[in-house]
Image 1 (cartoon, rainbow, N blue to C red):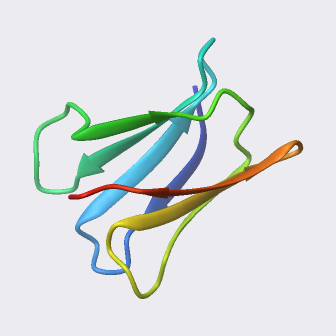
Image 2: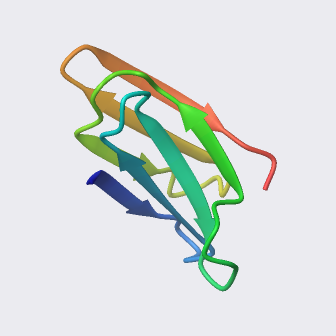
Amino acid sequence: MVTAIGISATDKYVCASDAAEKITAHIFKVDGDINPIASVSINMKIVHLAWSPNVEELFATAGKDHVAICTFDG
């Protein structure tokens, strides 16, 4: 089950968070494979996810008990 989704400013990446036991944000390349290119475990319910409008490798997640800023090397 997807709880939040975000698309990077250049439409190159999409990030989706799940509601599995170890809550994770998965990054996919829009023109790539169906498998994620990176994943990060947040372990807290994600209700909002947004990419930076200026930096392609930076996004944030938020929920009732957290705010997390995540980076990846593309």
